[in-house]
Image (tube, rainbow, N blue to C red):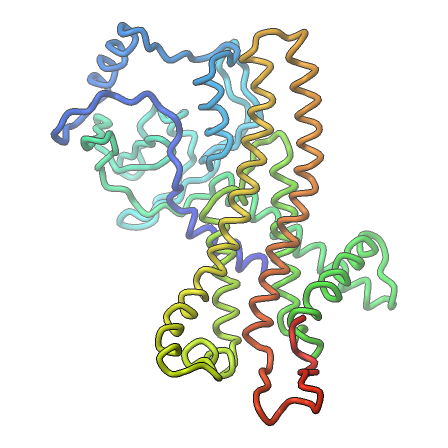
Length: 398
């Protein structure tokens, strides 16, 4: 299951949605081609106008801070640990680029050298612009439209980006954790080693999430998915709290994939009572049934949408707040006064973010189980109630 989740996320992340911050060249009204020379002249004109972009050295301007925060929130074809401000060197490692362009093209992202170089692979030329890979020519020509968006052909990108690598590592960790727990149960009823930490969390998801929302007779079928989603999101959130700059659950493509799994499982598990309440609600006049049917059908889409937006917005907001608090030190330029305040607030927010990392994983899992439970529960109408008028079905959701 973890590998399955990662596979779909890789496809969704094939073309990252966010563009990195860049110096916009003043566009013209017609589509035009920009080569290395024209870009150089445009940058020189930009500098002469007093808008020189600073490279290297300490981050001390608001625009630079904003660019750094946006860069932290984005996916990348390289894995950087830190950078030397004086020399401008980045320390980390490159990741494999996998393109489908008249066949599979496989090479290292180091060929791009921070988007400054042209990559030549098997007679094909590729240029990276704002984190996306476009097909080019031997001169590195990139054409832009009036809004400064590249119009070059973009090959299908299946690269192992920073977020994809993080998901694969977490998936491998989940596989190892649950395999070890299963083996420990074979040796006896009480788990040993790390299984002692996992067992209370698994029991918590079972007794407090799955059974109350899905029912004692049907919850086991969905425990694999619920446990995978909970630990997958939680570990990724914790990984995002580390200084290595990973923001997987803050990527809308990942949360869309996770919510899509919940939606598919819910719809394919739904019984006839669930669909009956959507398309022909019992006990409601016929004209109202016709009006409510499309609204109820739309409601099946808004539920997973709420899941993906809640996870994406909360995680992204947490990263932005922490990075902004750290930036206070550099923007204020008063280390004696700003550093204690900035570090204190950052530590406080980081502790809260640790709670949010668990809370968002729990909420996503709980709501997923609730939606599944609403789809599989048995509804009782006239003739099936007890004498006191209450429904005591084992699968009813409180």
